[in-house]
Image (cartoon, rainbow, N blue to C red; front, side, top):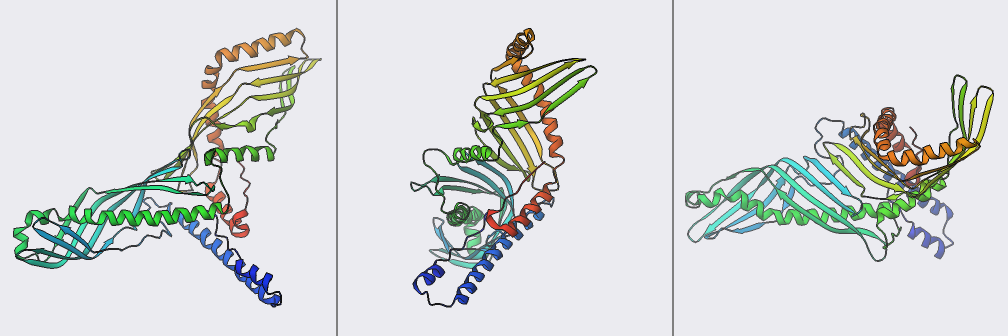
Length: 443
């Protein structure tokens, strides 16, 4: 999450309108603003570090830095019981901060997040007044709700001016069991026993609209504030989804980093008197990737997972080959074209960063392959036939055959990643460089 940027509007106005001000005062103001920005960055970094430490526990409860009122004040609630009226006063709900995040599902295409939050127990305390035509009772009451589950979803949208904002928030609260204790009921306790036995339902139904309204207000403010911090004044196009816009930016960065065209390391292999060398190999078109399916993220059992479905347009490559057999050597060139490459990848990372990431799924799909060779004489035609015909006939079997070895190789790379160390290094760079920091992550 990027830090809040302090805009020095007052200082700029002061400089423009009152040029006679002492320069030392301006420098002091700028120093204070820089100090505030640095303090904000340090607070955010400290909170992130606290969250990482929090999820090293076997059963993480709550969330460090979460702005959740506990207890939460609930407005006075009247409830009609037919022949009587139940008024609940000075009501407070306890235990809201002791939550567990059961699940999170994010759909980046539809810009929607669904979440499930669980509370083992929620305690509701307050005073009541139970009034009927012929009697009245009042006193303290306690309601205990167990196995409380909150389901929520939030959808984002791009406004006409290009700003990203919250569109809809939907929430529902359910519970598994409940118990209640209304004291000082007296004569009404026996007369309205059936109604009092259903009091927990009524208390919960009376509280539910307020809790949902408060949650909607708090979440909407929190989400929009974080979006403003991350996006700033950046505008998003309305013609495509923000996800596809981000992928387009990724293609641009891919080219800027020199990955398209991509230079493949030279290959040399010698087997007795026979030798093969591939050199000066370049692959073009790798930056033509696009979304062929959905991109989703999820959190379940304190583990984050990401599923990506991407494909490329036509991939072309050129290279030089050299084959040696004893004292004889042949040199030639090769050109190849792959109609497309599509991949589905799913990876996961436990929130306990001491653990290593995992690759859960890897699927490949490849289009037609065409190869042109020169330099081998008659063998050129044989090589072209072997490459152009056999792989196209057997490409599905070939893809299935390379998926498992590729997964194993990727997992071997993942096993070498110290996620905890990498995250700590990113936090330190953020403390020093702020929101514009960059991190060169390498396996």
